[in-house]
Image (cartoon, rainbow, N blue to C red):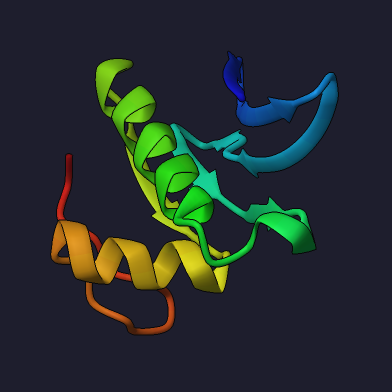
Length: 94
């Protein structure tokens, strides 16, 4: 399996097929983690968590700020980056 990073997306390829992804378009200077997908056959293996972790690290590497509208990413940020599960999600400035 291979993780591939594009401008606003990271995806996972297995046997030549795209099987998982996270997207994080930039809006008004903030990257919005808005979609996480993992193929049914690969769920429960920590792939979604790895995708979100990689997205956050990529955004931080770019010096950007982030928030999440994807419910999975919101939970990950609350557990791993001290964000508050409020509406809208409240994250410390990165």
